[in-house]
Amino acid sequence: MEKNASLLLVEDDQALGYLLKEYLGMKGFEVTWEKNGKDALEILKHEQFDLAILDVMMPEMDGFTLAGKMVEEYPGLPFMFLTARSLKIDVLKGFSLGAVDYLKKPVDEEELVVRINNLLRLVKNTRKKVETAGPSVISLGKYSYDPGNLLLTCNGEEIRLTGRENELLQYLAERKNKVCRHRDILVTIWGKNDYFNRKSLNVFITRLRKYLEKDDNVKLENVHNEGFVLRVME
Image (cartoon, rainbow, N blue to C red; front, side, top):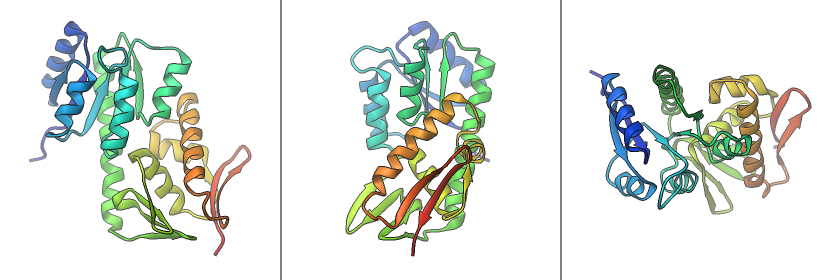
């Protein structure tokens, strides 16, 4: 029997936190509820989760800061934001940090469950794809790319990728020298082709370009109005 998905809920509002913990528990999730970012980081040292749900405005450590630390220390843990911060700049910041979704309060509990299940399904499919591919390392010019361990290496220097960076680079690397259309990337990795996800995709493309700038024979090129191509000149 497959175990229930384990969620880390980080929410300082007592009433909402209690409501979400109980409701998600009724829907079959195992929910651990923490009231601030510092406590969340502490429990991550001892427990593993399938998905983290983060508020932004919290005492001691806000959700954006918490997300940044999680990306550094637990790059394989997907996270989403659930917050009253609804300005465009906040949404873009959330996605640029690597969030797999950004929901605005007040939240519809049924919609939240649907989104969580969709995100978990996407993550599971991605991990299964990596496991099926095995421990093989992909050669990209001077770079050695190990998607199974989220590792990009060049001249002995290692770059540890976040989960979303790894998903995107693997998608492009498996299709190197071929045009990867915006829509196909977004639907496959983000699960949806919309404005905010397109902005998030551009942020991650910029990051990958920076990682790959040590070899002039490896270029992540923009194809106008079409998508991107990872050009590797052998």
